[in-house]
Amino acid sequence: MAEFIYWLRDVREHLRVSGRRKALRQPGQGFDYTKDRDTVEQVVSRLHPRRMRLRVTEVIQQTPTAKTFRLERTDGPLPPFRAGQYVNVFVDVDGVLTSRPYSIASPPGSQVLELTVRDKPGGFVAPYLLNQVKVGDELETTGPAGSFYYEPLIDGHDLVFLAGGSGITPFMSIIRDTFGRSQATSPLHIHLLYGSRTPDDVIYGHELAELAASHPNFHYSLVISEPPPGYEGPIGLLDADLIRRQVGKLSTSLGSRDLVDKTFYICGPGVMYDFCLTALTEMGVPGHKIRRELYGPPDDVTQEPGWPESLSAETIFHVEVEGGDTIRAPAGEPLLNSLERYGIVVPAICRAGECSACRTRLLSGRVFMPSHTGLRESDRRHGYIHACVSYPLENLRIRL
Image (tube, rainbow, N blue to C red; front, side, top):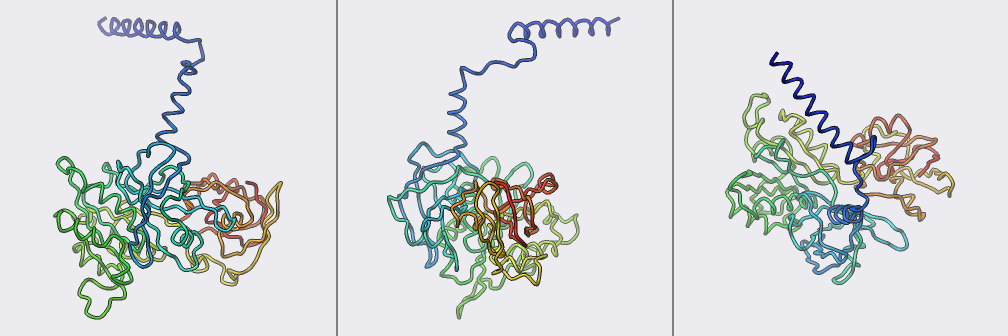
């Protein structure tokens, strides 16, 4: 009897709530937010702007090959972001409209956005930024994006950063954010292994050394691959033996406390990824404890696993854009780059095969995509590709 009374009370309460909802709205309709539409759009645009205008306030020569650009936003306040994210910078280089993603080095909450650019042999955008952009110039970027950041719910408190060259930039944002505020509630232990070719090409070297000296839970190991005579620090490449020596011996047993507690992050040149992933696999680090930032297309796609041995990077194919022009595209250049050279602008953010902003329908022909491309299975089945990391293997027909 008591259960029936409870059931009857629940039914009565349900009818009361349902009747109140019906009085507030018509059946089959939600609440009317029309009057709040402008306010909602303004708030969303402020938190997640699609585009930002940034003025260069300072240019710092970090190394002989790298500069840091400090910028302030001119069309609104800087939006919130996660330490480790990036913005995509749009430029016009000799009439070619293109873009490149650059990680934010400044911490969240800063009044300036800091981007560090390193010269790249054969580069297109980096030489323009390094040689042409000066204080007072304005740049257009996307809002902050990317998923390479610390996630406390799954990453734990013992982190190992493996950086190479300009791959230090997202780590700088995380390190500055971590040690620029109180650690009373959730202290992190960070060990940075930073690989550089020579000591004079180390970006943020002095700041990193000072942070390590003043924070006992931050360890900084600079690893030089081409040491000058008399150099006494760690040398070589970031292989398993060096990582073991610097971070501590890691057992291949999944029961090892060291192994279970550490999360590894990788960011650097393309060749570094395979090298470090091989080392971590050899050490027994499980895949879910490895985070990596995708840093653009490979420098030489012909060296990627699966590339046809008989196909030269200089081979030219024709790409027909449905309802538009037919362009010439070399096999060794990302399709997105080839389209931009002909004035065909395709939306792009990450340019590393992850965000899918440049998603394009492949109507005919074949393309090569590196194994790390984040193409969804549904896209693969229905003939979509990521133009930023797709290389023509024959003549193509596409739909933008």
